[in-house]
Image (tube, rainbow, N blue to C red):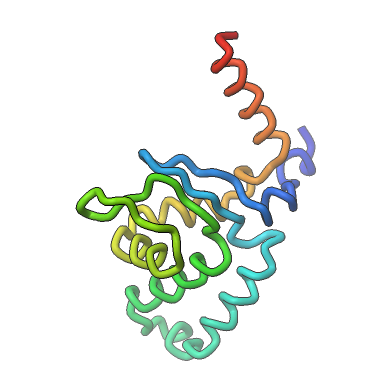
Length: 141
């Protein structure tokens, strides 16, 4: 297998999103990087006022997570299903709720970040193979 097979991704999936199954919920996400130029641009814009703190490693982790959660809410996470609050009540998909969930559940946020940064999740060939396998298993083949 050559380098292009290993590292090339689908710009379509990077921009239009894939679905992550996380516990009982489904998250539609774009890539954090790659062809998602909006993500890179907005992250640079939101981090820029804090460069001195970042350079000296003085930014509180919670502040950095809030900034990144806002960027993800605006450019990466584009939908969800079956996401509930701490009382198990359904949460409407909107920017404020995305930021709330990501900042209140940092381990979930980390899992989403890692999935959205992993180029292999946006490789057309892999997604198509998984879709074919899922269809076969649903049809009993």
